[in-house]
Picture 1 (cartoon, each protein chain N blue to C red):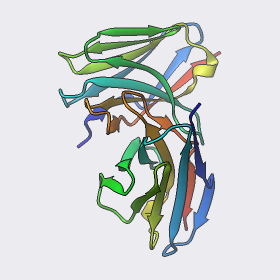
Picture 2: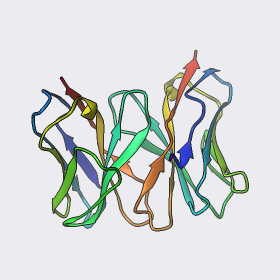
Picture 3: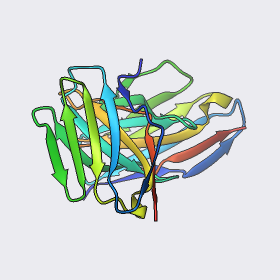
Picture 4: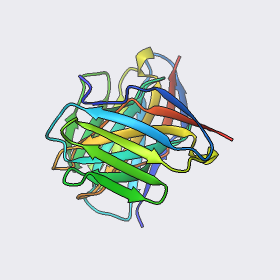
Length: 112
Length: 111
């Protein structure tokens, strides 16, 4: 049973606009959430994270929002750039940081 | 700084042949080590993780095994590959309250 879900397999956005990637989770014990970006034939690279004690974390063009009551997090990219085109994975971890659970990914295409 | 090396980058193996993928981490000690697999069109599935030498936890029953003979070395093995073992295999490490850091992956095709 998948504990982290990304229900949108793909998203297409115009350059300069906002990209919003969504993620849902089922385990209320998760307390650390991450977003990764992956290009083809490469390993995922860490993008941004958020602790469960926060509801927002911002790093440049990237902002992650956490809604614990809804068990939902989202990644906002503003403004979107063609170089942002990649597969984005959300992940969650329990307090011991020993295991990280990943969603199935959303392929973002930013059109010039 | 810490680096992770994973090899080979690509591998084509016949069904029934053995497998050995190796991963090493530099610049840190006693990291947590992980093997993930990304099957075609699917997400990242955790296969094994290790919190120390000789300590391996398996997440899913399958045709694969993992070993950690040294602190910063993690090996993924199989005695006899199946077609369903094809995929993109990723090694990763973490330490303390840090994110996972991935290697560049191995594309395995079983024919």
